[in-house]
Image (tube, rainbow, N blue to C red; front, side):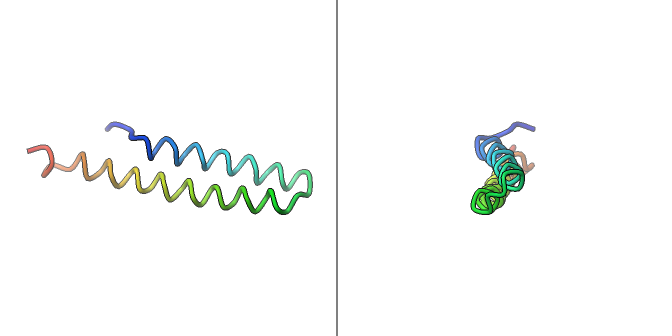
Length: 64
């Protein structure tokens, strides 16, 4: 199974979001914490979209 750009970008955004969320919690910056959570959600959605695209590409019907 290959990996597409949406999967990579989405998972990267998830990690960036988690970093921002934790940093926000540590320094007491609620705005940064919320921004991190939003980034995580967006990244998760993009990664799932990438997973879906890859599953469609890898499906037996497309390989005929």
